[in-house]
Length: 142
Image (cartoon, rainbow, N blue to C red; front, side, top):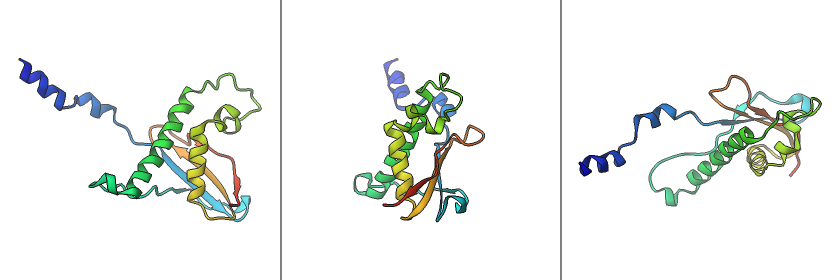
């Protein structure tokens, strides 16, 4: 029955929906000094409206931001941190901070923070209890 095999190609397997999970979220907090950082706030990556995606630059930028965050989570899963020395924290390990995706997410966080402020960002993965990655506090001077 070739017609049924063609139909199966058009309809996704239900297992696909069982594996769909929530995306990681980026949070930032800012303050005028490192001691005065505000509470964590989710970064609004922009609108994700449907429609003419080819002519929706804000929605495309939002998807690119989320893709960079997702990529960082995937790459962190690929980094073997079992050999990390006890005095080096994961957040400051060069194998993590030198990842291109880490730098991209850091830039995304900085673009959502005011200038001349101290910034800290973190990634939360909904399936994991607690923070997935918390970046050190840095000064956002430019």
